Length: 134
Image (cartoon, rainbow, N blue to C red; front, side, top):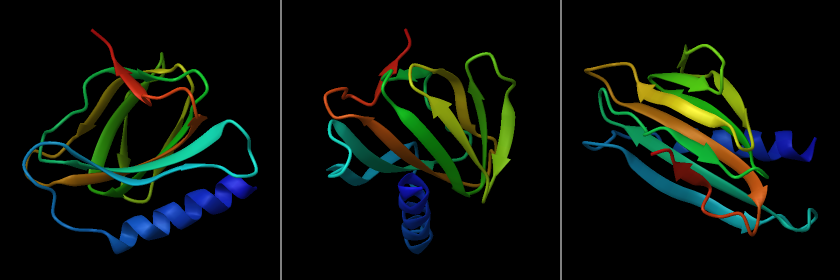
């Protein structure tokens, strides 16, 4: 229940920060903080701005992570593990379990920017939050 409240607050913050994306992918760290009543866990919130056609390279997250990705604007195609690739539009979200392979995450538009809010609860000692797949 506490996590849902945190996610809702983060989404509300993102709506107040809507602005144009710059050329290329930009990641803005909004929150990085230990969670006081969950020892050993931290909350990170990142805003990912995608230029038209921009993509995040394939990556994995720490095994202790739980991720919520919320599309603030535009449309993002995502594929996690063996699931099917799906396009998420503004207002839609998906979750990722720890250790998941995130093979596709890209702005589907070739003309408009997109914005993604990534909320991550992770073991405090399990940073970096993501590791590129080579």
